[in-house]
Image 1 (cartoon, rainbow, N blue to C red):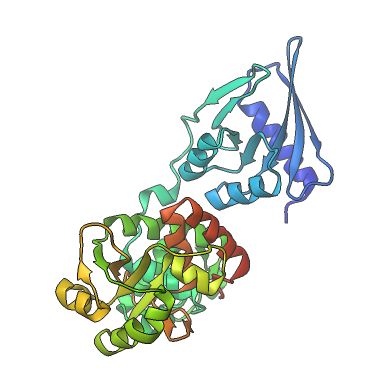
Image 2: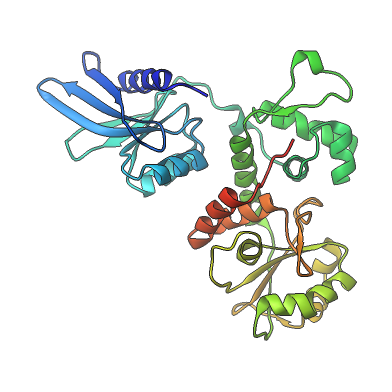
Length: 350
């Protein structure tokens, strides 16, 4: 873990890099804080600007959210290189940012304004690599505890050997997996570089796929959705679907209770059942509607997505998939996602 003194230097250097020459920067660690935080003093002429800064590691959205949840008074977030999603989150929550790539957007009540975009840095590798379904399947396998070897991924997911090799290689290029020179060769395993970054990268890609998925909306009568799934819908799905799983808010209540109730149950079913909406509606005991739905059905994104636990006869999606779906919905669901990740081990387990 990087020490406080090293982070203090990183904050000072990053701040100095985005300021005009001659402006003095002083940094002092803040005491008794739950995350790496620093008092920053910027002296420009006769003016002095002070603010509380926090260090958000690599700069993923989850890094930023953890920092600001631990220290709500942070005014400016520093990181190695903030992702676009992290910057958007900070902008929405009226906090400034500075990162080691040379990007900065700070506007303080003292009159300090810094807006700078680094023009000479190389584009991150992840911006050039588009996640595919096979990559998501491989990532979910790793999140479920499968060793990141071609053979193990092929066996767990059912995707071809070539697709498995390509998926792992692409995640290695993204910096999510690592394989040392000493362990290269057939059957060699990669290792996860950073568990939080792996989950964040997967969740962002899963959310993008979700946006492109077709949704079938079903309305049916029930007094309690969990009771209906346990006694009626679950047994019917077991008979008519090879693989199915509840995700989203309903799954989070069973995995890590945070939300008090669920308005719409999100459900994944296999491609065959999803291809026939009328038959699907009959299995679920309802009817297809354009609005007023109580169940939203999507086709299973990958074969691994349904590999979560079974609770009271209800098949749940892989916890990492539940987390990604909650994050994609946002609002209270995003809060439930944070609680789920803090409560349940969503992986990776390799």
